[in-house]
Image (cartoon, protein in one colour):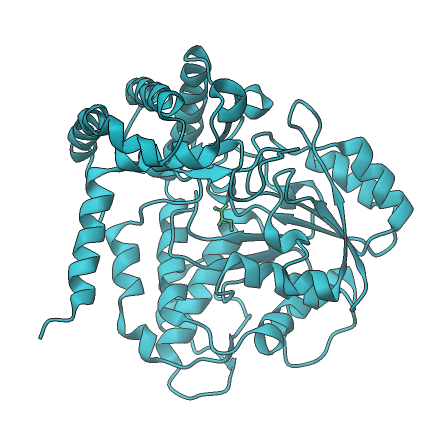
Length: 451
Ligand code: DSN
């Protein structure tokens, strides 16, 4: 009997092809990334690390023949060592880092590994609050990290920027071990230099950036790189704007050396401390099929075409934001400087983000309901929706399609305003179906890579 899982995978291919993905943290990987992920590398155990020793000035052709010592706990690593080493070298090149740990299974694991590398239980970490646009792993009380470390939070100003005055005042008063700049719903470009100046006044303060959302924009040169502004560590996922497999990555500046010997706990030694923290500190065996897919994605991001892609993501986001404003939508921060748009539908139209998410799903436009800073609606009735352009830009949609998209979003908003409840959306099935057909027709003109 055929496993029904494969029918479900085929259904998902159809859903992805016939709809448009607007969730700002999602993307479509290339056929090569998919192939690496689905490879025999999944059969291999490789706890430990490949050699850190140089293979020459980024000469990838030498890696096939050079004998590399390793720090692994299993035999049979000849190919895996080379693959992981390529992933590390490419990541360092892409992000101007001295060191990369490519093993974190996710962004959450990457963040936890950095905290564990640098902090002792009870140490203070200063990060953006979740309602302001920060991430769960930046100190939300429901997480394990928040039970171990003492998180202090800063917020955003009324115009949607980081409240740098609050950040500085709290940093000086609390003397945190880590200052963290990172977010999952923030539309401005952070002033990394200003934060680095603040951190310089605090002894042994690690500067950490969680750039999961914008890593692809950094790689493509359209967003500043925190590692160029004095930050010591940058974490990211690899599957958002960076367009690789689902996974995490930690980049750092400092001394690179064997992870076998326990190093002194200094900021210069943070690369080695991070390696020890990822394995054996917080993870077991790395997923080498994913590491290979990360290497493929980093290789793609090093190509000149990726710069055009990153530029187009931002261009599309800005046009989409302007068009939405013209249609009467209220945008948090008044627009966007990156790939992400946060719309306050409650203020604009009177309904909450959940009904809008549902109605848009019915027409094949996928995004997510999201709280806006100072939201009173809670997690289940947030006032906003969050959307972005990384995935649709991968499919080749451009500025004229952004105008069509904004017009559809307005039509669906008008339907929600009349329906008022999710149940009553059924009364508007015919209108929604008409939009659904238009979305499908457009989507099919822009094939999903790898399908
Ligand atoms: N789930 C990711 C996002 O959507 O922003 C963050 O982890």
